Structure formats: C-alpha cells, structure tokens
Amino acid sequence: AQSVTQPDIHITVSEGASLELRCNYSYGATPYLFWYVQSPGQGLQLLLKYFSGDTLVQGIKGFEAEFKRSQSSFNLRKPSVHWSDAAEYFCAVTPRGYNKLIFGAGTRLAVHP
Amino acid sequence: NAGVTQTPKFQVLKTGQSMTLQCAQDMNHEYMSWYRQDPGMGLRLIHYSVGAGITDQGEVPNGYNVSRSTTEDFPLRLLSAAPSQTSVYFCASNTGDTGELFFGEGSRLTVL
Image (cartoon, rainbow over all chains, first blue to last red; front, side, top):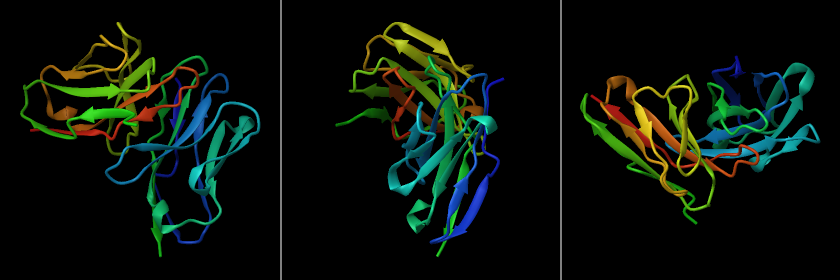
C-alpha cells in the first residue's frame, strides 16, 4: 500500500540550531513530493515541492529539501531555526497523474530560546 | 484574492444531527477535495472531485456525502453526525497538473 512515514512525532531544537525532518514514502515510482507547514489554529501552507530535475529544492522561509530516490526519502532541512518556525510539518506525496495527496502523520517542532 | 473559503469555522453538533460544511474556490481549479485532520494521523482524504458532476471516495468516506454542481463549490454533508466525526476539516483545490493543493483555513467540528 502507498504510504508516507514521518518517523519523528515531536522534535525540539534550540533557536539557531540546524534542523532536519525526515520523510520516507512507499510508492512504485517517483511521486510528486511536498512539504507543508501548519501553525497552530491555521491552515496548511506549502513550503516546497519536488516534481523533477534538481534533487535539492529550495522553499520559502529558508527551508530546503533533498529527494533521494535510492532511499525513497524527501527530508526537510533548515540551517538555522527561528522561534517562529515552531509549527507542525507535514510531508505529502501524490503519484504522478493522480491528484490525491497522501499525508504523513506530521512532525511537531518546538523551538527553545 | 479569496482562494479557498470554508464556512463555518466552528460548529458544535449533537449526535444524529446533520449539517453541511461549505467550500468555495475562486481559482477555477478543476480538482477539489475534503480532508479531515486528527491528532497523530495527519490529514486523511474523505472525498474528492475532478470536475463538476464528478466525485469519488477517498480513504475515509463513510458518514459523508459530497456533490459538485459547479466548479466553484464543493460542500461536504454529514448525514447523521457521530462523535467519531469530531475533527478539523480542510477543503482544498488544485489545477490537476501537479497535485499541489491550496487549502482553506479549516472548520473545527465537535460532535457531542
């Protein structure tokens, strides 16, 4: 079955530290890949997306993600976390040619001052 | 630029009551979908539509109905609310080219 796994439910980092959020997917072929962020009480905002081409993609708010086909992963990174990055982050995938996003369970990020 | 608009933002129902969550988009997107968000489970697809007059079931369709009479609107109906339907509901739309979704702000539903 198609699935998306975010292994970390909660992550806490200090402000200024680097961040990596993990995402693994299970599909037969390379899907379209997304990271969304949700601040408390808010809707979801697209951080970045991968369709094809360069496997390192840049997004908004200083985030980037790297697609690794061999590992079926699409990990999200940020070199220096800000307190305003505290939120829940969702990895999502959709098979090419379809339009039904499958979401991971999310990773909640807390940032210590 | 409104994007995707959901109403109401909050609703409390009693078990057995019915209601409709409204969703409208002004981006002329073909695809629209409804998700529910529950703690620790991410977002799960309830129903989706690939165009006016065409709908299909997602992962968790039981207890919900949808229709798509226009491109703009995609209401979600709860026929007989149950406590298990307490959740936050998100409507989304997209063009169909890449699967990138545009979300509404969500509707928080509590069923007592």
